[in-house]
Length: 262
Image (cartoon, rainbow, N blue to C red; front, side, top):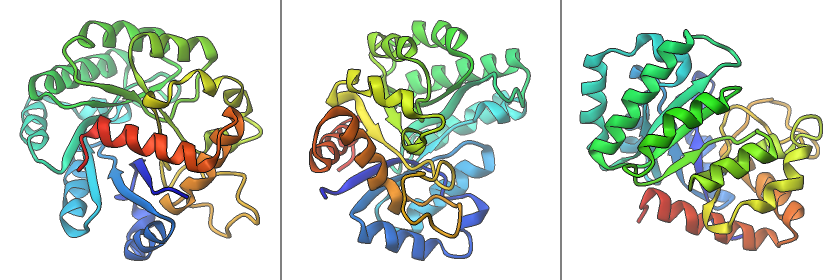
């Protein structure tokens, strides 16, 4: 298969501490790379940036996840501006709204989201977005910034057809994970994933989460890794009637353009 870019892997997660080098080796063996490591908190952003400096073939994002929104301060916003200037940081985020878990109050999430969109506009970097059960408020907040933002990707899309159509009308890129491999929850996504133009579709592992359920036999560990990303490509290819090679080539070209990867 054509090489693949994983646009979202949580490689700073504690589950990767014992064997990260082996995880990266397995990814490389499968032709996965570059990998964009997701930053989602003050400590996580620094850890992600440190990983990019330890290992070749890694880039990262820097942001505050809606779960962490209660910890966001103006001082931290200033730190994000500084972090965002690092060449290894290719997007701002993960940021957005999560009204499913509500781990931070909704109004706090909204303020934190708006603040990060402002920073992304100021420093001119694309945005890596999270939205769960908050579509209407998410679109209302994002909309006014779109003309000033270089590009935005709705990461780990799991929504409805009409929500997807709205994102596409707004010019958003779409990130697809192992959710599409889940016959219990993700089968509906297969029916309309073909609506996404090839130049707006990207793939991500979201490791260690969302292990593709199409892996046979299933791995002993439930931890997802970037090396399993080809299963996501396979599910997309099956849904849209293309070859895996074609989907891999298209999503890789799109990711290179989106993140301005060399």
